[in-house]
Length: 229
Image (spheres, rainbow, N blue to C red):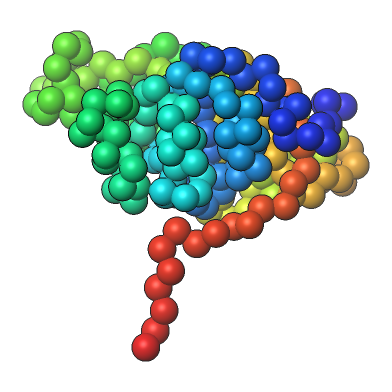
């Protein structure tokens, strides 16, 4: 059995100033909402955050951004956050933008223990500056180094007490690979079941990648509400 926390603040209390953290989700889908809120409460600062994007202005990682707790953001999309834009233009926030597929593979490689890989994405663009370019079969490829993190925060719909995780539909976006790439992975889950209750064929993150569990209900806000006339 893995440690099962009852306090979100306790679950993240050893995330220290200057830590590198990975956070699962895509926009507001599949984000560990309560773990992010707990980080806001702890006031930890100078974080390097690796995630697909930085949430929206008033939810998700946008709350950490608003609170000036993020020093550097590594992601692939930043278009839904006005505070993000303001901090970048004012020089308050360091940003490393990466093509989305490359970002996903850098995280996956980090979890698999692969230090680097070659990809055609970014060749001939500013992304390639200072990086090795090598030719394979007449085509140029860019060397990209893997990502890893001190802590990974993920969200799953269901877990057993060993820490095996199952995600809900498109919440299975960046969460599985991020769960594998952190030295300490903290999983926020909606339902916790007994060992043996999960169908082994459906487990998407094996327990070996998970160090802490906590159960919490999410608000599951909608990133951009669209309605018919």
